[in-house]
Length: 167
Image 1: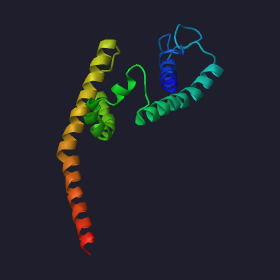
Image 2 (image 1 turned 30 degrees about the vertical axis):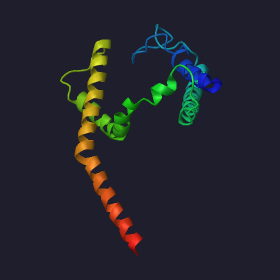
Image 3 (image 1 turned 120 degrees about the horizontal axis):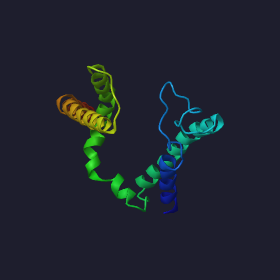
Image 4 (image 1 turned 180 degrees about the vertical axis):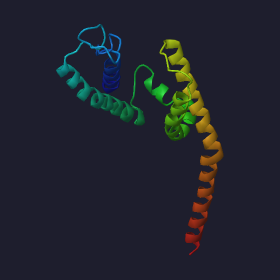
């Protein structure tokens, strides 16, 4: 229980509690020294943060994963959420989604008729649309290519093993 809470606390602290995202990001022509943008941190603090936060995130995820694999992840329903059967379809399509995702983003960005203007609503619609199209494209690729080829290779392997067993 202690390791479960420690790993979840570490991940929550790194995601929410470091204070590096209190202000808005700087635009290309702005300086954090003259405007109210950026984290306001010194160069040394930024260097330490950037060199420590990702390995610490990896350690937190590793602890949480190992505890979940061993059935020892307790507290806040994290084990139930991570082992939910609703993740199975996404898990089976995740590599196809990983491969298709940059292609779909490039098609969306390069196919735009005008420059992208940021707003929270546009960001949400773009995110939801890209994720949905990526999932549907990966599902089509899985149904039409990946799963039939997997079945064929499985049948071929069975025939090879049966022949080796008869000898």
